[in-house]
Amino acid sequence: MKTSLLQHRCPRNILVFRALPVGETLCAVPALRALRAACPEARITLVGLPWARDFPRRYPGYVDDFVAFPGFPGLPEQTPDLPAIPGFLTELQSRRFDLALQMHGESPLANAVVALFDAGANAGFQPAEAADIAATDTASAAFLPWPTQGSEVRRLLELTDFLGAPRQGERLEFPLLAEDMQALADSGAADDLPADGYICLHPCAGAGADRWPPPAFAAVGDALHAATGLPLVLTAAGSDAGHAVQQALRTPARHGQDPLAPGALAAQLSEARLVISDDKDIAQLCAALHRPSVGIFRATDIARWAPLEQDQHRSVWAPPGFTADEGVGEVLQQAEALLAREQPARLRARARA
Image (tube, rainbow, N blue to C red; front, side, top):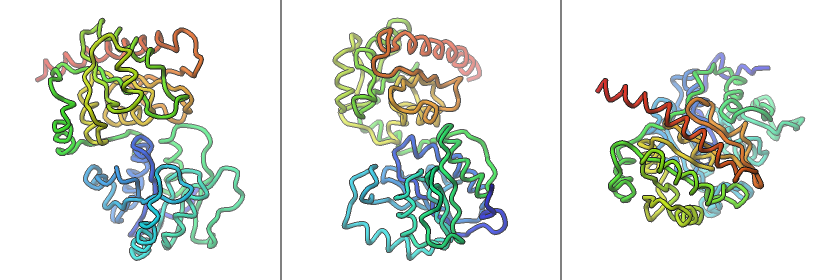
């Protein structure tokens, strides 16, 4: 059942709380688009992790302001900056938001944090199994049980549906800024890259169970380089996983010395002919950049985190212990299909130019 929270009189000052890594935050862009379309005159402020401070300039049509979240005890996304929390809360409370949307997920703690912002009304998600919400004033709250199935993009859109904001499409976006390209150039990671493009390998820097084995990454990279002549670029510079893949490759791979900020990394991925990764954030970033990718899923929920555009983004399920050399053959098959599909499009684009 939908609530009429946005259907009759839109709030003028809206806070959206989603303090998550890059790919997970990008999944909220379609919901932000729907929110803006439903409330075109509202001032929308995103409260997120510090990496997202460029959101108002990157998405001026959807977000007007940004406040960096200092973290909070019990929320795992970052180590909380305890001395900064009181000032952060005081600032948000002083802004007198009409509505605070908890778009962080099903966490009851996230609801409790949003309640501390002291907005006129709170809305968002509650745990699927919860009978009641934590808010003390249920008349000023509208919480949707967390959807337990489907993609993250569509789960978040279920919230804006529930609040009365019609969908404006499911596509992801990551507009590049001039400083993204400059940061990439300054890093040296883009030096001597050919105009015809390259293949990016991005191994996950997370826990071991989520990582595709470095020899499997290397086998795919070496085979694709041998078949296409395209150079390889390692875009996980500085991580243990990146070093392990580099050592396993027979083909020399270009790489920077330091990890890239999200904007610079996006700039590098934007010129790739193909991206191979076992990182769900990179899968969503490639979807937002509209760059072909093969995502390897090991322990992460593939139905939730695989990109929706399956023609351009192929997802391979290869859990630990998977046979056939950990899915190397399937990844290669999907990669070759994407490269073959992309080549005619590139030739047509050159002819038009």
